[in-house]
Image 1 (tube, one colour):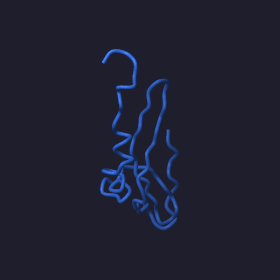
Image 2: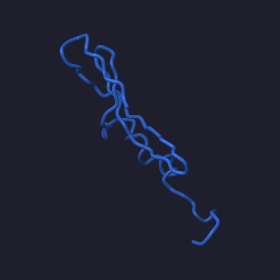
Image 3: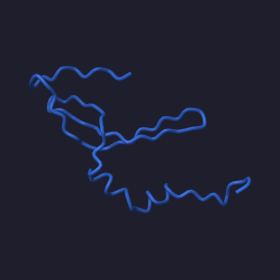
Length: 83
């Protein structure tokens, strides 16, 4: 459960501005869940996690790079068992 955001000190409501995208990883037993979230900040200093910005510069730098392609490709030939 997330903690509630304190009231804004600059006005009646927060004005959220996207700062960057982050990945969150949750490992449970033998499975892992990776999710993409956006980090937002208000002028008063409060932060929250919300929907990611799919046009953010941090995603454009990853997609198509060698690091992204290497993590997306799995070499199954080295695993044991039936194919």
